[in-house]
Length: 448
Image (cartoon, rainbow, N blue to C red; front, side, top):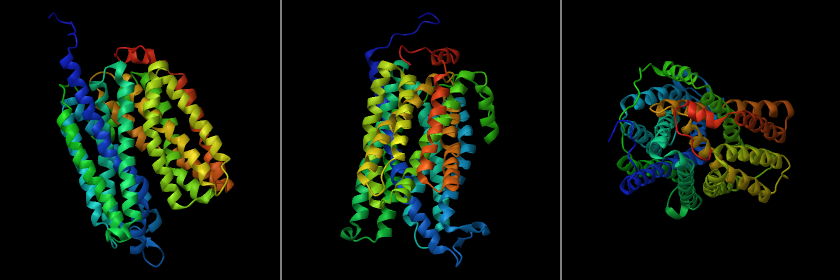
């Protein structure tokens, strides 16, 4: 075979690629349970209650001698985990691309997170410091593992398959989150029948997420394979590596333009996810059980939404489909502004709208970005993508909080988030994605 000739794909090659893709889906099945059961439902209220039990008469705990309100301890722990992740992700990304050995990094990060989550079983009494430490380790490890996991996408799926593969991955994760959350809620609601106290049931739910994460991670570690590094990298410590990655992105301004658009509209998505329960409880007067049922509904419908939007992308392209989802997000928030208080049925309608666009907008954003990454720099660029996903989503909660402070209305706060979807739409619509793909040195798919 002469130099430059591309070998035609054989049936065995196709079967091996599909086998690797199925292994890749299973990692989403493994780790999404942590996001759903641990972060979204159980850990925040439980860790706060542990901190409150350890607080002094004024309601303060004193980690490392620093006075902290017990009610703020969980939020501060999450913030610290994001800072740790922002430092670690660029280092891990550069190492993965430099060596080509992504699988050991994925395994190390996944099992560190799974072990920390399983260790939450021992979070009882006044052990709020243990809970905070385990949260920081688990959350930072999940971020690093997600970065490595996402960086496999350009390597396991050719351009024409990428939207579908990314959508199936998201759908698989939401399916696992739904399944385990149902089991957790049965255990939690009927804890007396299982001979458990309420706190013991919560600890079992937390630990089971870690065991689930660790057990199913075995599948992708067996099926995914390492590739030889194609680009030489010079490592730099922590944030300097992130800065070096951003400087490199300046040579690909269209990739950077997409990342800016994603940063804006994803900030809106993440804020809706985090603040919807506050809106439901404080403005609409809904109970905890209703809110948990709404979370479960979002998870279930996100499976269908991710798969449906993946199919739409085959016809209309990922960019147009994402733009359509941003319009749907805007209409959903507008409808949420008018929801009547004390009417859970309408809140479930709102949750349905969120679920149907949530998975698809995230999955297609990931696949579209994968086309804009220069070959050989997948992990490094996806570290910047993960930083924008996890480390930069602060402006939305700030706007939500400031709007509520100025107006005293959660309805005004929720409608203020429309700005992120409108601005994100305008920024994304201006990105010439075909030109951006060519500029990154990648083949342009027929539909994008």
